[in-house]
Amino acid sequence: MNPLMDEDNSAYCPSCCSTLVVPYIRCAECALKTELCLKCFARGVEFGDHQNSHSYCVVKLDFPLYESHWTAQEELQLLKLIESCGYGNWKEIGMHMRDKTGSECEAHYNRYYINYPEDPLPGFPEYHQQIYPTPMVFTLSEDPPRPPEGSAMCTDMAGYSAARGDFSVEYDNFAEMDICNMTFDPADNEDEADKKLTEELNLTLLFIYRKRLKERHRRKRILKDYGLINIRRDGLQKIGVEKELRRVMDEMRVFTTLMSPMENDKLLAGIQYEYDLKREIKRLQEYRTNGLKHLRSIHLYKVLRQRRAASKQKRHLLTDVISHIRDETACQTWLQRHAATDGSNNSFSVPLPSAPRRNAPPLDIAGFPGYENLSPSERELCQTVRLVPKAYQEFRTLLINEDHKHGGLRLAQARTLIKIDVNKTRKLYDFLVQEGVINKIR
Image 1: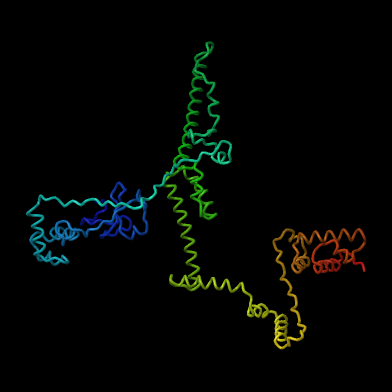
Image 2: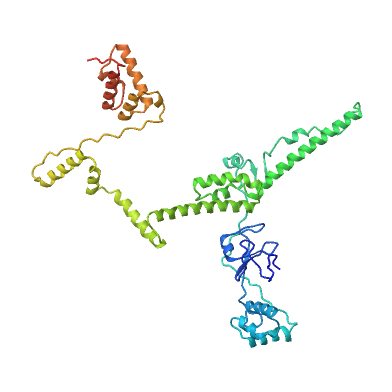
């Protein structure tokens, strides 16, 4: 009997406490009979020893017990009505039955519950389903590879020898060194106190050695149970897994000492499912941001997005107009060029004005090394000329040293010393002359 029962013997869901209505779910693995409603089962509810990965069966009462037109649900309803209304009150019982009259209820109950009380309930053969093809059984501890001794794979496997199933170098490899020369034979000249002390020390050493052997055995058991020695299988599990998720899975390996192999695999599978679910949610949010409300519109959106990306790579007349429309001078030059091209004769060429060179935007040097050592005017110069503070300081030191050697400096000499753009060199040279740092030679 279900331990979660009301006074009227109706079971209820242990998660949401709602009354169970067929069909509902019954766990096939829990020691205590666990029954869930369909909503809690669909949400994957877990509590106590019950896990959402347990085997289950669907409880339905739409099958016949005695007669083909009487279902098990109707049998239970009939027995409850007889218990509440009393035997013989068939008219009232028939009013509560949905598809049966009072006379039909009386005839059925008298025939199968009164006249033949010793007949057992009918037996139902177990349902066996053969699946073709048979699914592959997952084995945790597969046969590990057998790399040659001294190879790179042998080193990665910590010197594991698959032929004898052991390591060439054990964990805590020198544990036996502490007891190899131990002896329990006391010397003749020792008194009883020294003999007893020596015996206690030897027993303590043996106790410590036993703990070290247990730790060695525990580590080997973890390697075997989790299949960690098979690096090929571990590599196959990570094929197709993104770098960030692979890093998380590697970090979760420390919990293998706290969980069983199946629980660990279930945890890793749950992490990967969560990662895939977040990625899918992010993709759906992108669709919703772009105004999509139906899944059937996604295919059309992808096609249009590909077309837009392809069209952006192609340069056309409208692209030129948009690129020049913000700069008035460039826009006028572009219009003059196209007007001259459209109105000119093919027999001679018309000189076309060239578009002026657009200045690069100022460089944001805040946070660069050496920024705090510059004056406000030097910072403005570096932003305009697009020089990082460290390079400016090196150029400034170089020009000052050259100026001190010769008692002055020409622009041509500065261009020879500084191998950068000539316009940037002129601006830097003029700035240092204006600041009085170097002397200009005509």
